Structures are given as C-alpha cells and as structure tokens.
Length: 245
Ligand SMILES: Nc1ncnc2c1ncn2[C@@H]1O[C@H](COP(=O)(O)OP(=O)(O)O)[C@@H](O)[C@H]1O
Ligand SMILES: [Mg+2]
Image (cartoon, protein in one colour):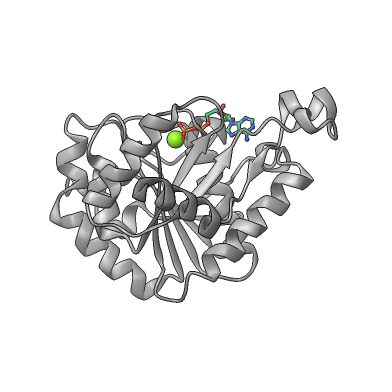
C-alpha cells in the first residue's frame, strides 16, 4: 500500500518552520544512537502534536534515515482527512486487536524512506489495545528494521495511554502549544511521565506567535509557522531547577 501525502499540506510549512524542524532533528540525533523509538505526546488535544510529529518524521527521512510514523492516537486521528488519503482502509487499531498482521497495515509513502501506519477505525478500548503485548513486541521488532520509530501518542492529560507507550519508548517529547496550557498543568503532565519511568528528551514549543517580535508581522503570526524546536537541555534544565526549589 502506498500513501500519497498531500503536497499542498506539506508545502504549507514555511521556511522558518522547516528550519525549526531541522533543529529539532539535530537535537534528537545528539540524544545518542540508543534513542530510536520516540513517543510524541502533549498535555491536551489540538496542541499540534500530529503536525509536529509528521514533520519531524519527514525531516529525519529527508536526511536518509529509515523512518516509520505510527499514528497511535487512536481516539483522535486527523492525518487521513488532512492529507486526503484514499484507498487505505486499515490501520493500527486493526493490528493491535489482532485483526491484521503488521505487514498489512504498514504503508510506503511519496516521501522516500518514510513508512506510515494510519490509526484505523476508533476502537472501543484504545487504552487496552495500546497497553497490550502486541504494542511492546512490535516496538522491539521495529527498532531492528528502522533507524527511527516515531509514535504519535495520545495526549497525557486526558488518559493514561501516553504513559503506557512512553514506557516502551526510548524517549518522549512533549509538544506544548504556547499560551494554551497552564504552567501547573504542564508540570503535572511532566511529573506523570516521570513517574511512569520514561526518559524525557525535551519539549517543542508550538504555535508561538512570532508577530510579537515584529519581524514577520501579522500574516505569519496568524497563519503560519511558529514551530520552535526547543533545545531540550535548556528547557528541561529549567523545569528541573524549579522543581528542586
Ligand atoms: N505551528 C502551528 N501554526 C499554526 N497552526 C498549527 C500549528 N501546529 C498545528 N496547527 C494546527 O492546529 C490544529 C491541531 O493540530 P494537530 O497536529 O492535529 O494537533 P494534535 O495532534 O495535537 O491534536 C490543526 O488544524 C493544525 O493544522
Ligand atoms: Mg493528532
């Protein structure tokens, strides 16, 4: 099966955002070669997790890494509609419930080196499926085949699915939409992730309003870009210090 990602959607990412994704990619590469399975999450839906995750997967594939993007946000998946993907009826929920083999749900794409698994129909029991043995065995197997396994995980704030996946991953990246989520809530999410024992690689500050600095003006401020691949050392260093006080 082959997925044609919508060229218009992809081209919509502006120059500054592209550069930010390259920075994010570089930061991930510097995490070391033991970081292969990366779980992307956020506190709440709509912070831009899927947008950032897919663009990160593309940025890694563009440099020749073999990448697979898995849409594991079984409750809310928009990738299929957004990219107007037709003809692919199967997805991750089919695999997790044992209805399909993994080979039957994985798709190649029009981006060289990038494979994708869509979410599939919303199952009645997403938490159970994501916590099943299929999930952990799969991630173990995929790390032998791909350079990077990028998982679009559910948000942490609402359900426990994200922490389940995070445990199986080598690292977690938190996507934070600027100004939408309270500092306190973000701290809670972070501590939930830490308690579950996962390695937090860093955070991406998304939807940053660049118009404030007067450089891009209203057009860019309103309509685009605004992805900051935040350097995790700095970001989490800060969280750490504040926690110790
Ligand atoms: N940096 C950004 N600037 C502008 N719009 C964005 C940005 N990131 C995401 N969006 C938009 O926000 C909405 C939610 O993004 P999505 O990636 O689906 O979020 P999530 O996966 O966290 O639920 C989408 O309409 C998406 O196009
Ligand atoms: Mg999403």
